[in-house]
Length: 613
Image 1 (cartoon, rainbow, N blue to C red):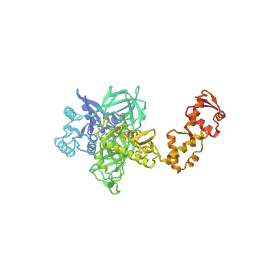
Image 2 (cartoon, rainbow, N blue to C red; image 1 turned 90 degrees about the vertical axis):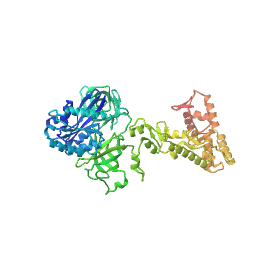
Image 3 (cartoon, rainbow, N blue to C red; image 1 turned 120 degrees about the vertical axis):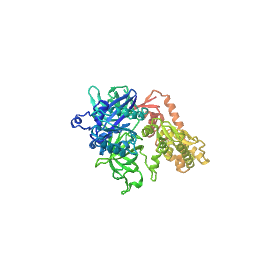
Image 4 (tube, rainbow, N blue to C red; image 1 turned 60 degrees about the vertical axis):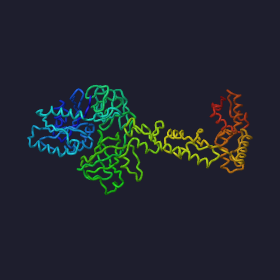
């Protein structure tokens, strides 16, 4: 079944609610105050199956200027506007405001109902039709069908149903594949069920028993039950009015403006880039102007910041009827995705002044001189990857775009969960090779660079897994533990350095377990201290020498002899004095050596004793 959301629009007391009742049999005014005052205050809902394969969901909105904020909460989800104009009054202020709101929200189709036709003569009806033609010229309503109706007498109601059916069949349904989103317009507690939220499912499909997330709070919840148009359902599809019974949260924790969506896929944002259109009826807009922003069912205080540096001048303004690329900063976070439409209203007086479409939520930092307009006009998911200096995780790209399976060209390389420009990855590998070449020239006696130093030099802000992927594909480099070198690099010692190497090793070999002071050995070897330390490090890497502690180095043969002696005493327990007696060393050497043996799992400390393992 096709599901199309029809939203009413029009001035107060032009008969929107009466018309919905005449069409569907449902009184959309559900509040006692609405009944008492005779006006619509909040959103009302009804539905009508006009054919076995087509259902219309009606959202009845208030027409009073004081309740435009409520109207906006319902207008965001509509597919087809039922524009209501009283034939006895014609176009009025909220007629125009609702018209501009529908246009700015990207509504593509509509039907015009000239209500209270029984109260208008032919002359008045002709005048109103001329006003409507003037209002709708060049807009989505220009060729919209018009039907003169009377909810009081029933005249024209059947014709209007037929016209709505025909128009609805031409409207494109909401996308039921992909990620689901449900902007919440009501939250309440139902006895015996608990927390229930309602809204129009604007995308995707929602099933019973599914894990979901409430944005922007981040609450992870479970769907206990679903209703579609008041009937229990196993699933709800995009375009359907949906009630969701949630477990894991109290109704008081949920409010209009929040969004129910996929768990873990998105992130609420506090700023986004957009194309903003200022209405011709608005006053000029300055850089950093405060506004009320309406998106989905949410209303958030925000600030409009022009992205063009020239527009940030104190004297510069966005003129009525003009448009600009802007960054809108939100006082509170909200779940928004590229393609979402929004409306902005002034703080005082609170009137609609413009609207636009979200283009980018990535929080891109513009460089001095960067053309924001050119970037945003050409922005695609692939472009987001190409501009990221250290790549983008696939799940982050989904969060930025709302697209589950982004088609990417050969210009994008995949590195596990990461996406990065293939050319950028190639350049990183070239830079890694160049860095190692430079290191070998400066430190010819060292095996290679520490891997962390290489990352800091070439890919400082990259994720470790992306760096590892890049390094693995650098064919001229070889990893040996935490050291990276050119495959062609070999440490070649000059004769003097070979002699120094032998002298250092011999000094430690002669000392046995009573290791000499490292500084004394290096000073006695006859070369400058820096080269002597490099040769010492080489012997440690080759495991000819063993570092027992920061200040204690032993020859590998002495450690091997000690291990052999202890193996012969396996299972025995001993004290520090006994160990000193066995080895002939002082306490100065005994304690760090025993701690080394503990780390090597040769011994295990048990109070004042040690066990030979």
